Image (cartoon, rainbow, N blue to C red; front, side, top):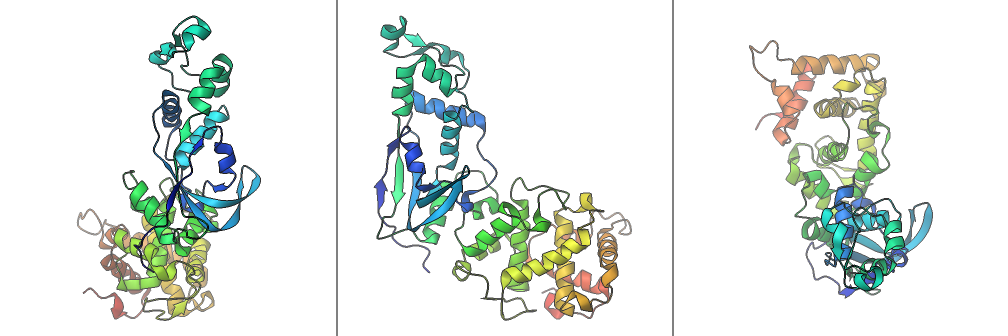
Length: 397
């Protein structure tokens, strides 16, 4: 599928703040590809509300008309929607917070004496005091001001598509990730997150939105997921099973996987270029087999504080190597001692005490370096430690 093609028409769907709740009943405000930890603070939100009241034009909201309507749940209510939000989540969220009395206007001395032309006739002086008010106080003290300056404020909405023509998944991804949010400070995984595709959805769901057991935040790992660290680690797992040593697991390499049209609609039967497969596999099932084995090893949480990102990568390779070497757990030569085997081996290979004062080990360095050479080295080290025969696919080039 072509990544760049002419877009369907963009129509004006402007509405006032008073009309916004009705519009939201037909909008998927928080599609899963937009779901991440809240980026904007409440302080930022209160300045957005003040901007509205002062008459500053906010940037346009961007929505996408969908071919078929679908169900979403918001605030415990089931909605049938035909539009998807591409860019406006933070602003709408804070407008709703203000509408619900959760957010206040900023406190500032200039707002204690805000000039407003009708104030002289209504209140006997030319200024009003809106500093720190919530919506109920604003409405109660200055009803006309509230109606004119807030409820009647016109929100600009760009709606792409119509009943005959809609954005493709790649066009929605390009709009959010490249056009509308490229200026935002996000790491590589946060930029990949809004990709509209099956593989992106599964990684989002399994790592964060509806996490599988091992990815439950704070449960088994010694680190949390504020900036999609779990998503990144899971993306690396998918990339390895898809490509092995045949593609770089760098940020660019992960971008290519997310943008691969072959992974856009389904990953239940995709070709793996990893030399241990070289056939079509159910990618999610294969990744979950490795993650399930990893969970067996760390489930008792004995070493939870030590389960950082580097140890996760080591454990993933250890478990994947066992599953691809023996086929199933029942054939492991030391199944009952698997946990001991891993933690002993990992500790020995990252130990620098015998390296004549060297600040780091080659194995430890490979666990934090995202490239094919480091993955080869991890495999070589583990195979050598376990006493397995050489696999020349992991030789240095």
